[in-house]
Image (cartoon, rainbow, N blue to C red; front, side, top):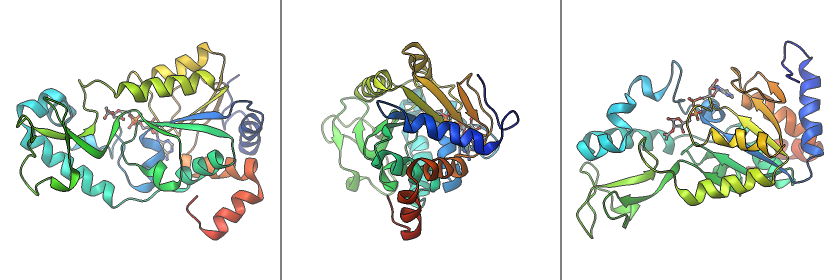
Length: 264
Ligand code: OAD
């Protein structure tokens, strides 16, 4: 059955999702995308405010582009890094962290590289598209210390002199295999998959809802413009919906967290 705000009162939808979370035997898995960070002012990849309206992915975000002109791509990466250094988690990240803390969520599998789930207190975070915490050489994979990155020039590998880049996944690059296997195992064990703020267009992340379908898990989607044929759909913003769900599932524990303004 497809539940939408149009077909069912909002509160009933929230109650239904809270019920599913409370009765999940294994703990749910959340799959998140750029939409979960929109309220933190991290631009999403598609849509009007998308980063890609200024930076054509073919020119800036492919491994081939990096090999051809690392200097140019580093300009984009430095801008991304500066932007990410200035953002903070929002209520959606905090609600997911609180649900994990309460034992209702086993993992957050994210396509984001902004580390806001970790900042909010989520512990079991699987980063499908890597992160900028570490850097490595694209030729020999040797790690490169973050604090040794020069202010302007492209960092070069101390071992082979190849160009170094942050370990965020570019188009045309393999996903960190261990992260994807960990995500698959988490989804296989889950009886509920919560898909939040992703256009679910990019493979192989888009495979995870299909995997959940095959293993018989219930799928809920939270997105102002839903894209999946889920068991339950809440057409709305993650930063509004997830706190309302956490309130229903965690009750006073969530209210206390909010009052204290504590980072979960
Ligand atoms: P997209 O930018 O493709 O999709 C963002 C989704 O968030 C859309 O479906 C929006 O409707 C939804 N959205 C917008 N505001 C929201 C809000 N407040 N609450 C909830 N949802 C909201 O981002 P991703 O699906 O994450 O890959 O993109 C996946 C991958 O494509 C990225 O990780 C990146 C990109 O190319 C790489 O860099 C390898």
